[in-house]
Image (cartoon, rainbow, N blue to C red):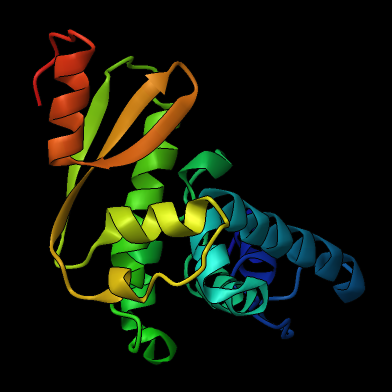
Length: 192
């Protein structure tokens, strides 16, 4: 095992040092600084990508999910904007989340918004994200932070979500019907 691979295993994979895999001359407490920094950065990246999920499940539970995700899913890129692409699938596998079957679809919508925001292409809309849940209504209700009585939103109501670029750096989730109406009213030529 190369020196780089040993550092990788100790920092990213959290493989405890043994005489066979120890990095020569590295202090265990020194590596823990890098390990904690790595995990915290990935956890914070997830919070930035999934703000509505944080709002929906609470900060403490989201951090719990984030720690588990970071442990199971190391970053494959030096660009933190690419981290979290399979968080929706991870959430759907968690027993702790099975009472909230729409969380995976909300995560897909949020990741789509995140990726579309950072794309270099200047398309007007992107989608669809098809769900058996009212994900656009759920996303909006929690995005605004003004969640009151929205029990009606949790009913299974299929929605097709689209991400619309309203201004160069402002994105919003809409249903297909809303996107069609917006494009028509703004005389846009882009087709869905």
